[in-house]
Length: 242
Image (cartoon, rainbow, N blue to C red; front, side):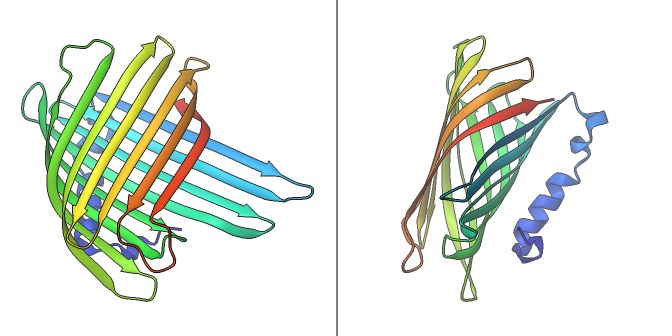
């Protein structure tokens, strides 16, 4: 599991600053949204296999501030042999400077047992804006900023590099009960580049329960010897909001 003691100090400081902000208290927030996502598969017989995909998110909107905290993980094993294990966490704070623009501070940490890295963390500061401003059923947000990435190697030692991060978030409301989402980000560093894509379709089952189909892709241009540069995750999960 994630060992937060090993997160670089500047990244840990970013998490602490966001988590301890007064705006993260429910009683002082205008809007608080919580989300829990879970998907699992268990088989027995000729093949004993189990997989678990889970995620949690909290979004807090308070006047000019918008906060988001997420935690997600993946675990899979076949015949008692672990084949995949990943945990990641992200915290961000947006400060609204106009109706459509904002400044963003973002901190993330990923611990992937089979990536060749012991863990990877990054912190970025960026400017964002709403690009589709007059579409009732669509939204597109883009942001660009700079920061640093910290990669801890399995054999020991830590690499740090400056990065430029570009990201877009697209949401299309297909109907009253269905929506399509597409998030894309590019993190260009001095040593390697990381490209991420998250595609999802979600449909409501009940008032606070929905079914989500998602495809997650991560591509890193430079990885340890013997490791694949591209990872993909396809999932069907239940999502509950409260």
